[in-house]
Every structure is written in structure tokens, then in C-alpha cells.
Amino acid sequence: RFAEINYGPWDRLANNAPFIEGVGPKPAGANFYPADMTKEEFEAAAAEDPTLRSLYTVVVRGDDGGLRAVPYHEAYAAPMQRAAEKLRAAAALAEEPGLKRYLELRAEALLTSDYQPSDLAWMDMKDNTLDVVIGPIETYEDQLFGYKAAAETFILVKDREWSERLARYAELLPMLQEGLPVPPEYKQETPGTDSDLNAYDAIYYAGDANAGSKTIAINLPNDEEVQLQKGTRRLQLKNSMRAKFDKILLPIADVLIAEDQREHITFDAFFGNTMFHEVAHGLGIKNTLDGRGTVREALREHASALEEGKADILGLYMVTKLKEAGELDADLMDHYVTFLAGIFRSVRFGASSAHGRANMIRFNFFKEMGAFERDAATGTYRVHFDKMTEAMNALSEKILRFQGDGDYEGVAAFVAKYAQVEPELQ
Image (cartoon, rainbow, N blue to C red; front, side, top):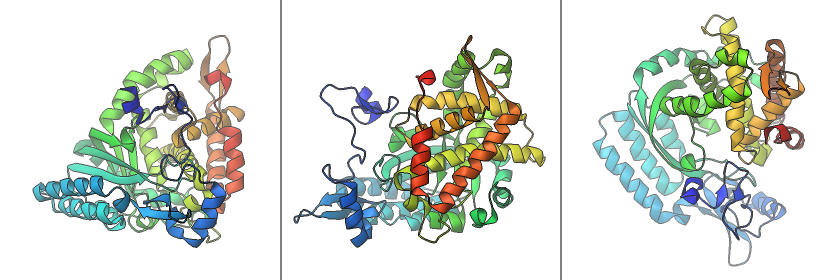
């Protein structure tokens, strides 16, 4: 049963430590690449055949011993065909035209590995109550290069009352982009104005979404061209979020947060911090300033961790700026203390995942800047409001510059320094 939860014999909340005797370390490239392939071999081959870097190909050895890209719809033809048939059956029953069109195009995408038309259709879908997120989407599982997407599914039901409350923030994206704490060249891209923000109840998780810890918010599509054209959709999974707040975050806060600051741990702040994390994915910069390509391509295996770190810190930055602008009725101390408690909740993921590394970067950077301190006598932590604000601005600028510069070496050194689980957290 534990192997089913982890989708394999490695414990995802313990840095992928094997829990079955005789099982070795988890391959960094999962099963996307040949086990005997070196990074240097891949880079040389990819220079000749760019499809090796595609999100939707698995890399195998050809008869000549060289590397060859096989599209997912060919490598996994039988399950892709079954999934496509189910989506077409669902489309036949769908009453909302946008949902019907999306399901039909997504079925086609599973059979062709061309996901952009269905991503665009998904962004055009506005009036649906039911939502289905399916396909190879996130690249966290590929810790060798961060190129390959793993398959997942969510089935969600929209909470229309909460969604109406959130709609206002999607309209503020251009203003938030302009206010980012970096020079103009790092924020010259304009976020798509068709972005939307909605609350849902999750009723089903599968595949990559269901492996180990469960996602409480989603920001899609990941396709940079679709993001610039249409924006992104931020899906807040309200029932999953409430369960994690009640069952995980509050008990942790009762142990690790200074007693007189525990009153600042609120669900509204937790919901807001998570919501603006997802909003922040749509902000910043998607393509490097030197025109070499996307940030994801430039930063390779570090791209996901840095992107999650950006979303974490810019989310808090936006809460602060919206409060100052009178657009958000919030107690910033609630958000800051709940943010720190959220780090302790998320640090349980370890440093093996992109989210885990982002958590550790934030914790160690904030600690270095004095944003919080630990009372050795009680083992509890206290937030310092002014220093928290300073650390937030400093980390926001550093990450956005790394992304815009496509600074692979700089990011690698930054991650090596800050993405470590210190003894006090073990």
C-alpha cells in the first residue's frame, strides 16, 4: 500500500529514500531516459535532434546504440488510446459547449502529443462547473533535466460562490506585473489578460498528481506561448486546502510557532497565500533576456525549483502590495505568520521535490536575513515583521534576475547553498 501511495518503492516525503530492501536510489531521470545515459551524451545528441528535449517524448537507445526520441502517444499507445476513448465518451455527454470542445481536443492530443490546441480551448472554457485536467503536464519527476512531463489527472467541481470573490484578482495581473521589484527589462512581458482564478472541490486525483503529497492548488497551462497569449488558470482546491490546514498546519503551528503569535494562524491567510502563489506563476518572465529561449530550457533541472520559489515569494509580495493599494482586506501579520507555519508544513516534503527545494531556499534565505528567529528554550519560532518584508523583496528580486538572465551556473550555486534541510528541521 505504501508503494501505491508513493507510486514506487521510494518515500517521496523522505528525500526518495528506498523503503524496500534491495532497491537502489531512485534514478534522477525516472524512466524517461536510458539508465546508462550520461548528461554529456544527451546534450550532444539533443544538439542534433531537439525532439529529445520535448516534454512529450521518452528517450530510448536505437539499434545503433544512439539516443532516439519516441513520442508518448507511440511509447504508451494502448493507455493513451483508452484514455482518449473515455474523454470522447465524456464529451458526448457534456452539455456545456466549451467543456465538450476541450474534451474532444484533449482526446486528440493524447493520440498526437500536440497539446497546445486543447490548452487554448481549456483557457477559453469559462462556464463549466466540472473540470478535467488530464495529460502529461508537470516536469517535477524529471530531476535529471526537468524536460519530461509526467501524466496526471484531476477531476474538479467549481465552487461558484468562492470563484466570484476571486475574479477581481485576475483583473489586477498587469498592475501586479508592473510593480515587480526588478528593473523594467525583467518585467517587460505582459501576462495574458484572459487569466482567471477559481475555487474548486477536488473529487479525484491520479498519476503524478496523486503521487505522495496532494496538490492544493494548480496553475496551468505550462506552455509559455499559451500563457503569453491567454494567461493562465489558477485553480484553488478548497476542500483539500481546508483538510491540510485543519489536520496538518494547525497541529504543527501549535508546536513550532511562538505562543503569542499563534492567533495569526488563520485559514483565510492560508487560502490567500496559496491563491497568490498560483497567481505568481503567471507573473515575471518566461523567456530569457538574451533571446536564447525559455527560462525552463536555460535553467534545466533547476527550473522547477526556482519557479516554485518565485511563486512562493511573489505570492506573499502581492498580498503585501494589494493590502497597501487597498485591494485586499487582510492582516499582513496573519499572512506572514501563516506563511512561516506553511514552510514547516511543506518542509515535510524534504528536498527531493521542486516544491521541497523551494521551501528550503525560502526558509534558509529568510533565516539568514533575520525574518524570524528560533527560541532555543521553547523550540518555537517568531516572525519579525519588518525583516520579513526586507527578505521578501530581496528574494523576489534575486529569483527574477536569475530567471531573466537564464543564469544556470548562478542558480546551481544558489540551490546548492540554500536548498538544504538544516539539522534543526530534521
